[in-house]
Length: 328
Image 1: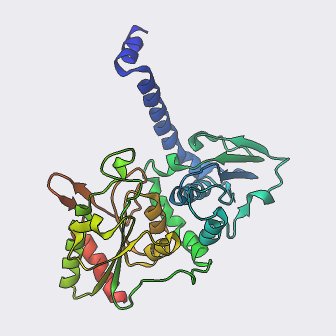
Image 2 (image 1 turned 90 degrees about the vertical axis):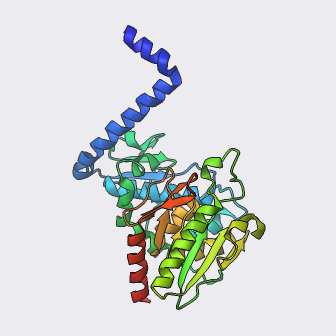
Image 3 (image 1 turned 60 degrees about the horizontal axis):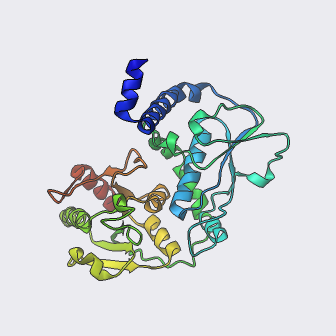
């Protein structure tokens, strides 16, 4: 007991509690491999609701919950978006993404016979029959044990929903006959310093990537069209001068998102907005590590602020671009 007290004093009470929680999550997460093979729960539902943040985070919450439901043999019930941090209504966003298509809708479930259980952590769901579980998201499952790679089982389903909702009102910047590169740069509430500085990516990172991509495309004799989507003004991106970029700053969020999805190459930011677009796209995805993990075929690019260089698999990128050329 004295040793435990000593450890608590060294680590600190709150830190120790967090450490124990993380260990518990890992243990429970590992046991899921067995549960996924054996569980067959009847009349068991899960839905996600209660978030009030941006659209990228809320779409990602739905995606994670749909994947969780599929992996554990329970039924995903769709709760339409309710409150979103956006200038547009939740109904507009609901129609745009169309995630409820072909799903059980929450208000269609006969709830009185069901036991409704609110869960803070989906890893601890016991999967009882005749139960509706309500969560905010299932990121703790998706972002552990390389489970994000399981999204590949559902991306066609996600894309079908998205494409079934008309996008004809949103202008396309896609240039036929070229490799269209879309760059999402998180700015606005994100800067080098401040509350969300961990989400900031230096413009020099994008410059390095673009120079390398353009070099590969020149070698492959492929023309490109580069589009950068962000906030602010062009002077904020002075490091990118001379790269022949089409800037789309503070434009319609629906048009921006749809053009990310339609592109041939997406250079992501550390943002659920571009992460969600990547899950809905057939593009080559260049991913900068953050808390949501990459899919198997995404190209991971890590920035070194000291050397001002990004590390990524250039040969694999060249092969993917070559394949795009052949399919054009």
